[in-house]
Length: 140
Image 1 (spheres, one colour):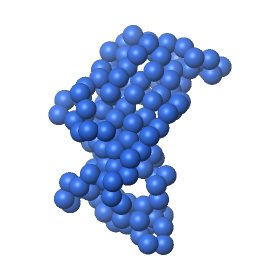
Image 2 (tube, helix red, strand yellow):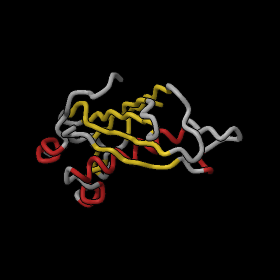
Image 3 (tube, one colour):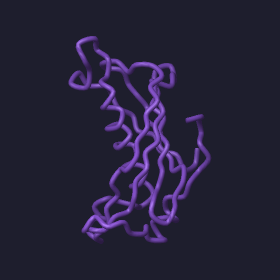
Image 4 (tube, one colour):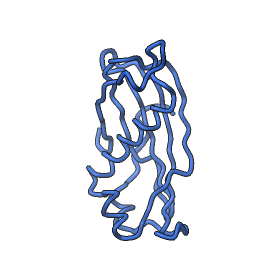
């Protein structure tokens, strides 16, 4: 689907608990991986933004856990832009088991633009165009 990025990863042993189930905090790390790749594929690199004095901290994150990810499973993390405004961009995420396509979790993360002094600022128009929203491919 156009406007969607997919990242594949394998659940590492260090990401699991004694039962071999991925710790819940790792889902946000996996979302960040997909979000960063999504931005890069559209020509928006964090490093370039930072060199221009722009930062994008996460100000809101919501994860809905549906089924556990387990050690050594191959996962697919999908990412897309749900909404972009003058100062905020909202991403959608879906984490699925590669083998059978089961949806393990959905997430939504919101980032706000701040300058190098951490004051809220606007997202440059060029960046907003590159991060064009698409309809949610799944129900979050």
